[in-house]
Image (cartoon, rainbow, N blue to C red; front, top):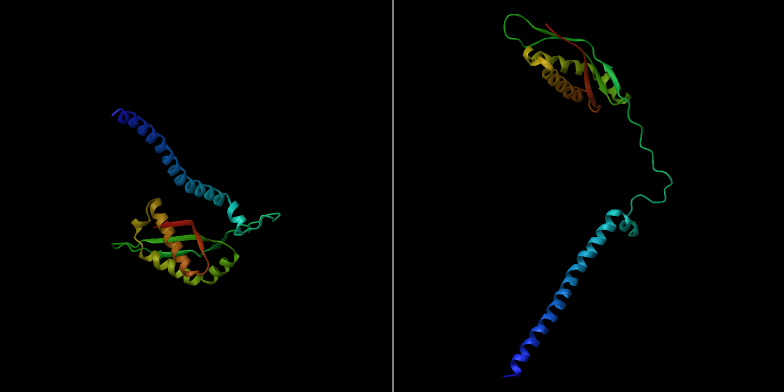
Length: 173
């Protein structure tokens, strides 16, 4: 019996020594792929790894980067004055007089818009005739009118792109 109690403390000490060694091995085995993945991601996102693999789309030896194209200068097209009667209730007629300019991206779009001017005037006049006077009140009414006229101008002048309709005069009487 004397051998039994002496053996038990030695077994416990042996278990304590082997447990951390097994845990350290597991930790190293689990941490190694995580560290390799983090290092690979760091190399990838810094651009080093794609360059080493020959996947770099832009050569690193170019002396100067290509200059971006100059911005397109907007062009303006004067619209003819449009006078139309509004969709008003009652006996008294209400009219709108609209004088505006249309902004496009360049000279090519300006030529396309000028060629489509009869269609553009027709679309604007038809839209204005369906509006009620109360829809034009305030800045919100003017903003809605601008958005609708831009949409119609883009339809009429396609493939040209209209960027804005600038009001010079809006008279409702």
